[in-house]
Amino acid sequence: MTVQRLDPGSPDSSGYGHDGISAPVSNAKLLHHKRLVLVWALMVLLPLALVRLSLFHVYPERMGGDRNLSAELQQMIQSVNLSALPSHRSGGCDLLQGEWIPDEVGPTYSNETCNHIQGHQNCLKNGRPDNGYMFWRWKPDDCELPRFNTTLFIELMRGKLMAFVGDSIARNHMQALLCTLSQIEKPIKTYTDEGDRHVRWWFPSNNFTVSTFWSPYLAFQTDDESHGIEKGHSKLFLDKLDPVWLANITQFDVLILSSGQWFFKNNLFFQNNTLIGCHHCPGFNITNLGFYFAYREILKHVLVELPKLQGFKGLAILRSFSPDHFEDGRWDNGGSCKRTVPFHPNRTIPTDSLTFEMHRIQREVYDCLERPDRVAMVDVTQISYLRPDGHPGPYRNFQPFSKEFVGHVQNDCLHWCIPGPVDTWNDMVLETMRQRLI
Image (cartoon, rainbow, N blue to C red):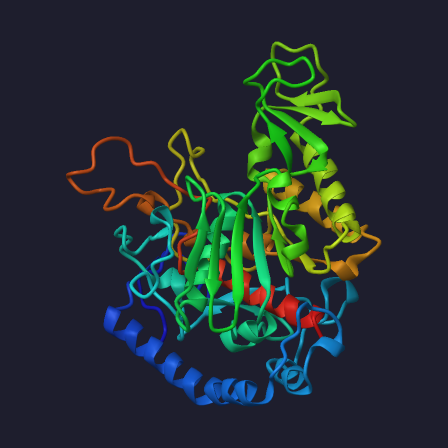
C-alpha cells in the first residue's frame, strides 16, 4: 500500500515535496497491516523463541564476547541481516547515506495499542489529521537497515538493564521502544519519582529492565549556593558526572546517552571546582565561553571516563543530536512545523546552524576516542533532519483548533510523534548492539 497524497505540492519524481499533504490512511487499512505483521511474527519468530526456551538453561549475566552467547543465539543474530553494516568508522556500506522511502508496512503499534506515549507526543490521539508520516522507512544507498526485531532484542537483553540518560528527547526515544516491546509483553512499572523524571520498567518473562534518568547535561548541575555564588544561579560542573545516573553505573548493560538542548540555558561553568566562565551571564564579571565550549568539555569527559569507571562493563551508546524544525519563528514566538512529507534526500543541514555545530562536536569527540570498543555512536542527526513532518506541531495539545481551545496554539517542532521517525532510531540502536555484542 502506498501513501496517498491529497496535494502533492511540488514533488519530484521520487515523491518528495516541500509542502505536500499526505492523505490519512484509514484505520481499517492500518489494522490490516498490523495483523499481517503479527501473523508474520508468529510464523517466523515464535519457533525461534520456542527453540530458545527449550535449549537455553543458563543466561549470560552480562554482555561480552562470544563466550557469553550460545551458538544458537549467535546464529540467530547473524541471520537477521546478511548484509550487516560495518561500524561507521570502518568504512564499507554507510548507514547515513540514503533516503526515506514509502513503506507499506508502517509501524508495529499505534496510539491505541500502546499506553506509554506521553500526551504531547500522542499526535493521532490529539487530532493530527494526517498519518502519512508513519509510512516511511530509512533506506541506506548500498545496504538495508533491518527492521526492529523484537525477538532478537529480547534475547540480547535477557536478564539485563538498558538505561536512557538525557533530557525529554531521551524519554521520547525510550517511550517509542516501550511501545514496540509492549506489543509482545506488557511491562510493569517498578519505580517512578515525582514528576516521572526517573522511571523503571520491567519485562518479567525475560527479566529485562529499561530505565530513564533525567540528566539533561549528563554532568552535575545545581542551583544551590556554591563557591560563593548565591542560590538561584545555575552552576554546571564540566568535569563531574551527574550522580543521578552515575550511582547506578554498575547495573547498566546498555547505556544510551543523549543531550544538547539544555546547554542553551544560562550557566556558570566550573572545572576542578574553579569558576572558569559562563554562557550568557550578564551581571557577572566572568568570561563568556559559550555553550559550545561547555558541551564539548562535558562530552569529552563523559565518553573518556565511562570506560574507566569501576564496575561498568556494559556498552555506552551516544545517540547524536536531534534536530528541530521550527519555521517562521522559534518555539516561544510563533514558530511552527506544517510539513507533511520528508525533505528531498539531497538536502543537508545548513553549516551555519546550531544543529550542524552540535553534531560536529559530537562526531569530533567520538572519532577521537582511544577505546571505541566500549562506546558506540548512533548517528540520527542527518536522517532526522530530513523528517520535518515527524513532529507534533500544534498537536502537542488535544484538538488544538477546537472551539473549546482558547489562546495561542503553541507548536512542538522538537519532540517526535509516536509512532513516527523516532522508531527508526531504535532500528539503528539494535543494529549497533548486534554489531558490538557478537
